[in-house]
Amino acid sequence: MAVIEVKYFNTFWLKKMTNVVGNTPTAPTAPYANVPHDYTALPLTDWAIEEARIRGGYNNTTVDFGVKAYLDEEDPIQQNRFNTLIYSGIFNSRTGINQTNQFSVGQDITRSLNPAHGSIQKLYAEDTNLIVFQEDKVSRALINKDAIYSAEGNPLVTSTNLVIGQIIAYAGEYGISNNPESFAVYGYRKYFSDKKRGCVLRLSKDGMTEISSYGMHDFFRDQLQTANSVVGGWDNHTKNYNICITSERIGTGQVGQNGGSAALVGNDVTVTLNAQIGSISAGDKVYKYTTSGQITGEYYATITSVIQITNPASFVANVFNEIPALQAIICWTEPSVTLSFDESVLGWTSFYSYEPTYVTSLVSDFYSFFNGKLYLHNSGKYGTFYGITNNSDVTLVLNAHPSVVKNFKTINYEGANGWELESMIASSGDITVPITKYSSPSNINLNSLAALELNMFANNFKRKENKFFGNLINNSSSTSGEILWGADSTGIKGFFSTVKMKLEWNTTNTDDVNYYTKKKELFSVSSDIVESSY
Image 1: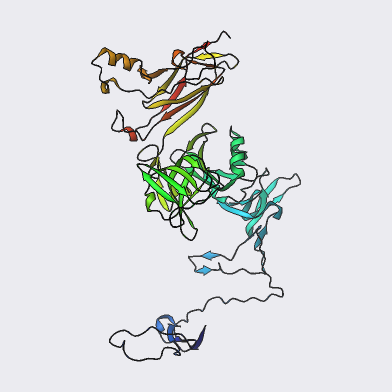
Image 2: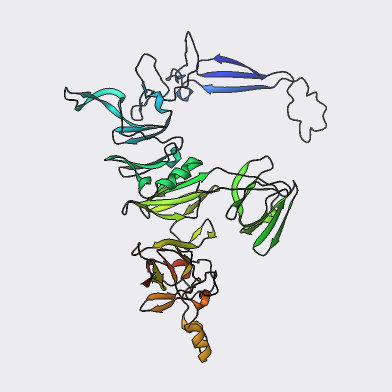
């Protein structure tokens, strides 16, 4: 508590501030440190002088004291008008007029939207319109103009002194829910998510379009149902809309000062917790948090296998930071997913392994924030996000002549070297042996006939005229002694087959020193088939 006395003079004010009795000032330093003083009941006094006239000159212009707050309401009860816009007076930097702190109750300075559509989450100014995003509705408000309607119902725009004119709702029962962070804009296209309705939307000149229905309706319905964060942004480099959905976190466990152990062996660490984790699985992440319970958002490892989930709980994780230095860690299931929408194909073209907290574009570059740091994308090594290298994969379905049972004999692809066949499973359950990437003969010792035959029949892709071919070897288990299975049987049988092609960016056995910085494109994947005779 303090007592302030203000006195006015011709050219200045004099302010005297006295603290309450009992405050103790700072003890004196040398050479007065040993001088006895009583600090228990000394009041602290401070003086401040401010000039009231310009330059303190005689009869110069007096500095204005500014607008003084004044409020007199009969029923001064606070109101939370979550569906209302309010605006102040004007600001003009040229003339020095500043009325941004004036909200006159004698003027019509508020515009209210339908409260049934929820609170206002986002405002976006576009030309002379203001787009208002509520939880369950999207509307536009006219700025510095209003609309009147003719007898036929056609709107006629008229000039007015209103700052916010008439509010007109867009067609469609969509909103932005409680995720304004999903909003992104490019040109006249606005992208955002609607968690309540489980969809992703685009607002453009042609109105509202549900872009999540382009082959991904079920996916977004399930992902958005449990999402607690939806981060969206426009990638100016690839001209795509990127969205990251982070779902609910499940299960916790501690190691360090609260007990448990963490043993590092190579790039893997075995973690044993003295508390039950709950539900964990491979692919979950190990995160750090402070002793006060604040999650830092920095994760140290990815779980590769689970030993037990009872008390105590144990798991093996692949480490990319110094996990033994941790005093406390937390593990939870966080099925985050990041994917992009491409307008040129009107479809969702790719999933990504990075999980940003915010994304934005500047000129032609795309940036994202993670753990308080800024990262530049589409630069440097491919497949590397936030210093972590991730493999790339493409999953597709081969389904020519869907009503005919076929024998798939080979797998072929057009593209760059480095792609491998990770798995191929037919509708019958037949699976094939994985096929590794093409290896240049110059790196293989072919001095002997045995080495040449071994290379010819090795289970890797062969290149011919810049195309890659691989023979499928059945890897299914035998259920009958009368049928040939495994390596004695080539090809797999079924109506269709699901193929997963993989590209390892973190491999060290490469034929090219610029392996990490070159594009590894995959143009097409096909298979030689023979129709079955049933």
